[in-house]
Image 1 (cartoon, rainbow, N blue to C red):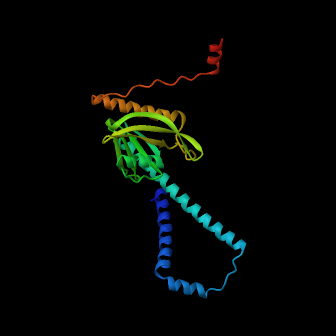
Image 2 (image 1 turned 90 degrees about the horizontal axis):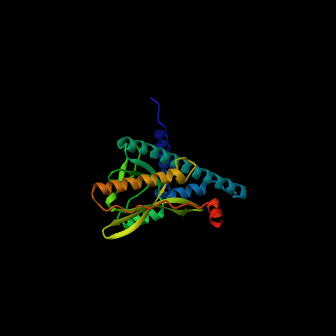
Image 3 (image 1 turned 30 degrees about the horizontal axis):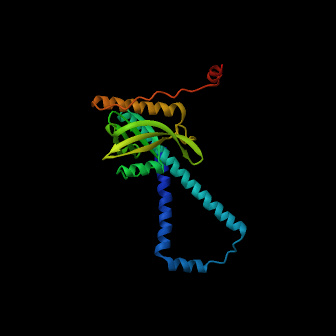
Length: 240
């Protein structure tokens, strides 16, 4: 029976974690014995070349561990997305990017949830929900459409890059604030979803929002017309 790549990645992570835990445990439980063993070892001259080699080994080990964690996270995200799309074919399933502004907004809403670097955002007839886990997704938070006052697109700075962000105006327990949601890019090399795919997702959220409010007989948010783009030809015609 072939072994899945996800199982191999999980096994590698468990092996690395077990070795690290064993080393830390030995150093914590047997410090006198460790000191005696180190004292019995022959002296090793620490040169610049040796220090550079040790530093390179440490950096390479860190990169390997980070790569394994990233692969495992992407594998879990793919499995989670397939499971969510299969469970609710009419919903829009997107991938969100964890960032500090979103976490702070959720805390203000009273939702202290732990989100991985990449999580799933499901938009259905009930509202927007956040999901973690792998092939067995776990819903960690839900925002009902009746709590959403408005949805609009904006931009924010992530590192040195300007990325689009979906802003949800939420009203809950007498307070009103905006929750910024950054959507992850579809390609592994891209950080955030941009251009037409991003705006298509935001339009879909707005449509589901209006449909849910209309079904409950609630007040609909005002429609916003698209901002006209002024071209050079239009300016030249106005001057003439």
